[in-house]
Length: 500
Image 1: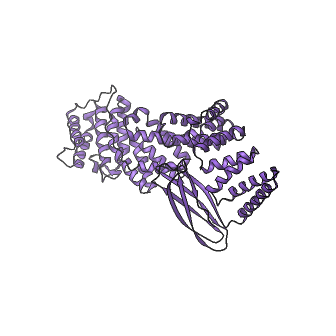
Image 2 (image 1 turned 90 degrees about the horizontal axis):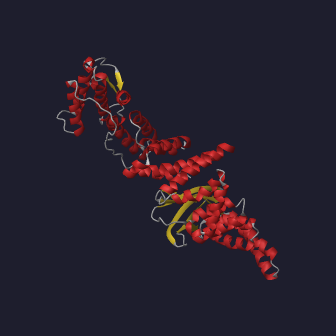
Image 3 (image 1 turned 60 degrees about the vertical axis):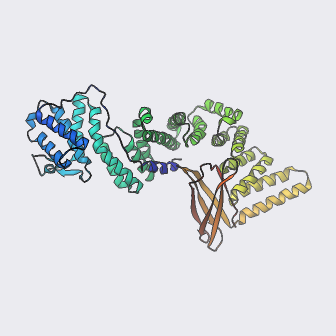
């Protein structure tokens, strides 16, 4: 379920991080006036910050470091101010475009132990941590921290888009050394983990991103709002997926947590393109988390007021109801088909529901449309054959009995000898694109080339896009295919022309 979000995650990575300084609102007080060397160093830092320093910034930073470390005793009465300005200078060093992460002390302006090396970010973080701990000035230190953090995150975003995931991961982990007050680095780490199919790491980083993408910050920054939207949905889905691997109380607790996340997501982001998918699985999560009464109430409301729900919600609710109430399941699936009559999973589940309910007239009618939508799937053909056969056994009209029996036999034979078999295993949104994917099996002894001609439909059944996909098939083998449609946001269903 998270697969469709990977493109969106990486698409956002093209928008580089730009953050302003965090304004101090605490009671922190840092003395930047005494002694005079500290005051002068701070003034120099102000000029560098403003971009109006006359000297080369590197040279200016070296002078500041030298001034603050050559005679440590000068600053014994003002360690907080000293650590703040020195930490700020090192953070600026780390942000220089051509600066290596580890440098010799003399290259940074230190006089003592000139040949020893310094991890610049770690040193800056250590100094600023002391300021945080001694004076409670985390809001003030956030500004220099972000100075070093921002170029690392921006560069990591570029590397993610270039598919250089390991290098991006290293930069993001470095960025978190100096500052972790914003969601971007964790968000990109989640994107990397998804690309690497490491769902536990992705979920952990989405959770950390969500903690930092608060509603307050989201209201002030559209990028943070988008991170909050994606992180909340993805974490909810991943929590459900992890719970599915558990049993007993652990599974129920996981389902409950996933339900809470997705309910909060739907409430906060009702217009999100992922909201319909979230809404669709909420009833089943209610059942799985132990709240069967709420699930039943919701399903009944769907039956009574289907106009308040979308097709996906109705299809999912019908599927969930199948094991306990087939009549309810049928009504929900019928309501879904009223809204989206060509949605293949809805058709398939309705056919099986009618079979279980022994309603072969409705089964045949829906199975006919299923075969029209997905004609080279042998399961669909077999289901239609079963419906015709059962109807032939029920009717007392001899002519009709023979026609139905013959049709069932023809269909059963067709399913058995069908030379080209199509299996659709993906039909979902990925960002702004619709992805249609599956495989085509060639059952003949000769390699051949086929063209899959696909109509993409809106909910009314109108064709809104068309694609032809030519696929080379090996003898007695199968070949996967993927079609992406970027120009038709109203796609809700598909049908393809018969092959073979």
